[in-house]
Length: 328
Image (tube, rainbow, N blue to C red; front, side, top):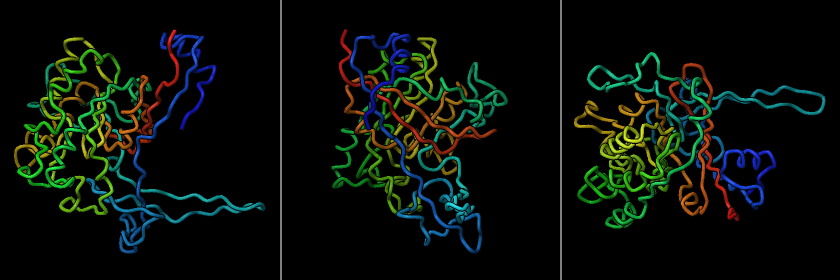
């Protein structure tokens, strides 16, 4: 969708020094969010979904918790018709969602120098608008991922000997990919990783073992060395980015999420290391292919729930991209 920049927005952009008054500028908005599948409540347990009763064209998605439950609509009549209103029960970290810094509690061993104590980490309602918006620095490795998928006819395999998305593979985000955009990494930006994994999001199942999206945690994302490089650049420049985001099951690579054993040991480097630096995470994006085609600067806007004490929640994430003639 394209929308002409309003006078107020133009003036705001001029005052920020991003465009000049004599330019013809458009904003191109891109929705980066998957729809949230919903289901009627189970008759046996009203807090659980009945997967045989999807709402509209909902199909289940694989995640850490059960599917969203949409409760029967309440009707409030007037002499001209009626209002409809429903209730929804949804987990904070399923689907396109944001993570607040209080999502992970570091123990003494994983807390790093100058780490923000857990008691001081922001919950959802404490996040600032500055954190939830920012210029996008796009890291696009989708062609490398596609090349790896072609080894198996375009399909991901849990077996790394068939399709390898481990941290040692080139088909995931590496430290070199972060260093390649180091000059763009500035205060408050969002690092958005396009790995081309959104195509497997609707696998038609919530079963981890059957979902091509989870792929037994053999999927691309930000590797441990990429997270280390982000931290290194922030320290070098004495800045803090707003967050990282990706079009995959987790911003962490599958290997990073899995850790070194079946107890999640040494796992989730993005989560373990970034939250203690007040850096946010957004997962399960879509339409990054459209974002990659934009020629002008794009900014991320995270529509985050403002619920008190929340560790994250469903998010309507959008990109706003400057298009048109910005020459002066």
